[in-house]
Length: 63
Image (tube, one colour):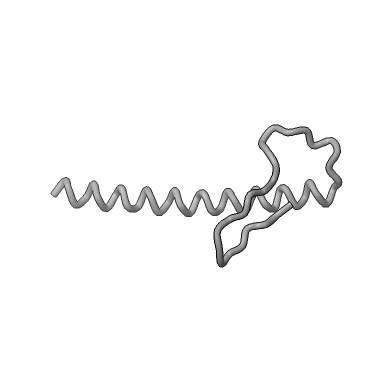
């Protein structure tokens, strides 16, 4: 399992949503959760930035 490098682009995780988890160890499952949580935070930050940009553009063009 790979993790996100904070100084560079995210690396592919090597897993797919919905795949069989039965063969993974407890450590692998915990790492997958950690990887997913980091990715969710990254997505939320990008979403917030885009919403902020949209709000600024809307405010500018509605004046």
